[in-house]
Length: 284
Image (cartoon, rainbow, N blue to C red; front, top):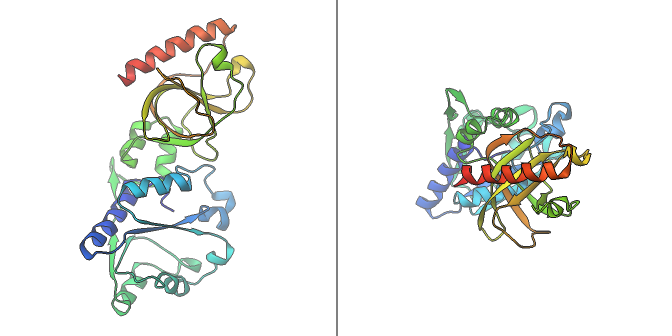
């Protein structure tokens, strides 16, 4: 799945990228969409993902990957025997195949590294099985990262991801309350991406053109205005411009405070000003 493209995933990808550089080939990443567990055991599937498919493609491209192949995971693909799936892999002239050493594939998890080792010589490719990557004494996994983010342990998530955690999405129309308060915000449609605990955060925002901006974000239901739906809205410091419809990425840097209800909008305005000042100090 490569959900999150964490440091364990990056180790596998780096081996393929290095092999491509030495042999003149093209490094590629094969992944699935949606998450296979959503097809095989929906009740056990994660409720949110660390990376959407476009975000995943962007991350792996920065790692030197030139070919991104997302396979549609459905009942038909899940029903392929290991040998059938392997033969589909051989449709391309594979020179090196890099996998986690515990990777399983095919119906009933019938394929593994031992299966691939038997076929590597005959098919003419180099098999590169990699051991798990450990962080803080434990194996890195998307499940561990999800739990760290839910707990608000973003420093731990950063160590496992190899980068700060971020979510992205298009800027959509909101109630424009921030503009009325003197702090216009960008309302981000983050979809099924996992978010950290609700509250106010100091953030860094990457705009579509690559420009990075400091900001302060509110994640939650906005109780002061009787909100009922969780939203992520970001005020970009020292910025003026129209972001509607544009894709932006929000990196969570520091938790500032829990979300709270204010008795009047002027009190909320004063607190937003204080939050913006606190975010500016953290991001300086």
